Image (cartoon, rainbow, N blue to C red):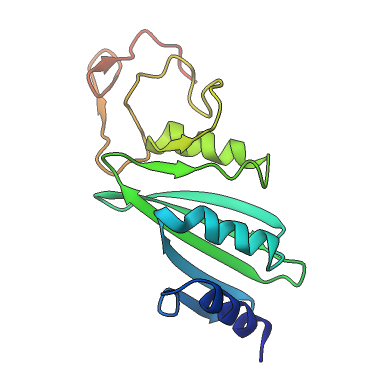
Length: 167
């Protein structure tokens, strides 16, 4: 049995109902899509029991009525596990993974700033990557967000930014 099949079997054995949610894409590439309610339990299992000891990145996605997070993990053999979870755009709350990987905070702050995701238990801090004076409720990576140009400068949503210094 290949390492990918061993990992797939381990997930299926440990968690009911994952058989149709975990796919081996190709050698050393596994994709798992799960409900947000069990995300932390599955993530914990991948890190502590299956040796996925490196968080490569977290990607935030706008999928229309839902926001999703895609966690890219790697193990020592070079197997990449992508865990995708999503939730309603109306109340997009995700669990932080900083207890496992403290450096995940930068990814989580990006998802908060750019997509409007809420990261549960992430302590307050400066915004990233947007400036602290960026208009509240404006999330530039959401599909429904529009940058409008005004004749005197830029307008973001209902906020006139013409007096802001250019980058």
